[in-house]
Length: 159
Image (tube, rainbow, N blue to C red):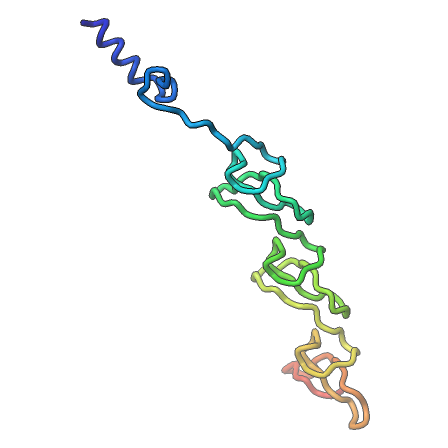
């Protein structure tokens, strides 16, 4: 009787996969055999169940999941060219000089994505173009230029 109870306890402790020979369970062959770094076409090919791009190279590779078990694609670090905020790790794609090309850039400490603006003295057509937010004509016959704000209330006034 004690031998039968011991045998029953041992059978309960065995994983079901080891009972395949007894017909109690059948283990399906695991097709997700690729390790992190190997090329893949779909998530189910990878042991991590995560197949994404992890660089500018368009090929997909098996990659690890995040701590929250998400499968996230690679995003461009600061300094890389971009066309949309979603392409960047910082979620910030803006111009950083006078050229029309945009680059991934850090957000401010208030998590804002601030675009580059023209420095004082540059030609402008609206206040939004200037870092001082002040685009004015110094004389009636002169072009509009970015100017520093002046006065006690830091207003946009001609010098």
